[in-house]
Amino acid sequence: MRAGQIWAAAAAACMIASAVQAEEPKAMNGTGKEAAAAAEDGLPLPRGTPEDVGMSSARLARIGATLKADVDAGRLPGAVVLVARHGKIVYYEAVGWRDKDAHAPMTKDTIFNIASMTKPMVTVGALMLSEQGRLFVDDAVAKYLPQFKSMKVAVLEDGGATIKETVPAERAITIQDLMRHTSGLIYGGRGTTAVHKMYPAGSAVAAMTLTGDEFLEKLGSAPLLYQPATVWDYGFGLDVLGLLLEKETKQSLGAYLEAALWKPLGMVDTGFSIPPEKASRYAKALANDPDTGKPQQVDPDATKPVKFDCGGGCAVSTASDYLRFALMLMNHGRLGDTRILGRKTVEYMLADQLGPNIKNLIGRADPTRADYGFGLGLAVRRTEGVVRLMGSVGDFSWPGASGTNWWVDPREELAVVFLAHSPGPIRWHYRQAINALVYEAIED
Image 1 (cartoon, one colour):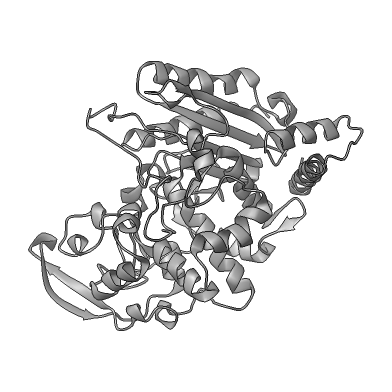
Image 2: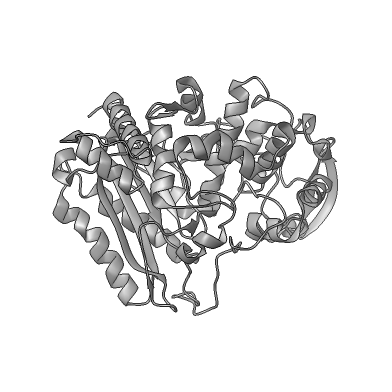
C-alpha cells in the first residue's frame, strides 16, 4: 500500500467515524468493517494483521512480553504502544498499570504528558500561519516580541563559571532559530555555566512558576549562550514560539491549536490540560526512579492550571491521537480528507535545517538521537548507519522527557507511538528497545 492508499484508508476511517457519530446505519463488509472498528477505537486507520503488511505477529508480540517483564520487575509502570504500517494498524496494546499504587490497569485511552512531543505540533501551528502569509521562518522574533531586540551573547571564562563580558548578537534570532534550537536560548537545567543559571530549568518549570510575560522578560534580559544560528543546543525556542503564536492569533496557544490542528485531525484528548471528567484516565509515574531509587514525578500536573501554555513541553495526548498527527506528516500534510499543511511545507519541515556551520549537540539532549540532523521542530535522519537507532534516511521524530516517544519512517510507511511515564534515564533504554523490537518484526 503506497502513500495514496494510506490516505484512502484514513479517509475511509474518517468517513465511517462521521457515519457512526451521525448514527446512520450502513451495510459494511471488508474494508468498511475494518474502518468501522478503527473508528470505534478512535483510530485513523483500519486494523490489519502484521502479515498483511510484511511484518511478523510472533515478533511483534515480543513488544508486550518485554514490557510486561519490566512491569513485573518494577522498572516500568506501564505503556501503550501503537504500530501502523502500509495503512493498517498492526499492533495496539496497553501493558501494565496506569496508576500502579491505585492498582488501575493501563488502558489504550490513557492520557500522558507528552513533554517535548509538544514541540512538533507547535511548529506545525506556526507553519500554518506561514502558509497564510502571516509570518515567515526568516522573520526576526523581535518583530513580534520586542523583548528580544538587541540581544547580547555571553563571553565566558573560568570554565564557564563566570561571564567575562557580553557582546551584541551578530544577527537577530529568527523564527527558524526557535524551531531548530539554534537561538542560544538554552534550558537552564541542561548545563552548569553562569548563563545556564540565569535561565529556568525547563519548559514545565517555567510554565508552573512564571506568566508568559514574565517568562519573555526573563529570557529577553538574559544573555544568550551562543551567537544565533551557530550551535544546536536544546532550549526554550518552542516555548517562545508558542507565545509568539498567541500574540499573532490573539488567543491562547491551546485554543489556537485546538481550532487549527487538534480538532480538524480528530485529536479529541490532546490539549494543555485534562478536564475533571477525564482525570481518571491520567497516567502516573512510579513513585521512585527504578535505577536511582530517588523520588520522581512528571511535570506539570495536567489536572492543575499552569501560568501559560508552554509550547516546549506541556501538552497531553493519547497514542491514537498522536498517531493522527504523525500520519498527517507522513502523508505530506493531510489525514483523510483534512489537509493541515501543503506538501512542500511538510517537505521543508522534514528537511535537515542544520548547515555545515552549525555545531550539532543533539546527542547531549538525547543520546539516542546523536548524529541525527534536525528539521523544524523534530529530528531527521541523515544516514543509514552511525546513529544508535535502526531506521531509514528521512525518518523523523522527537521524544518527550516524560518517557514518551514516536517516529515515522516514510520509506517503510511505518509510524510508531510509544507512551509511558518513565522520566528518568531509563527512557533512553525504551527508545532503543522499542525501535529494535519494531524493526526486527519487518519481514518483507
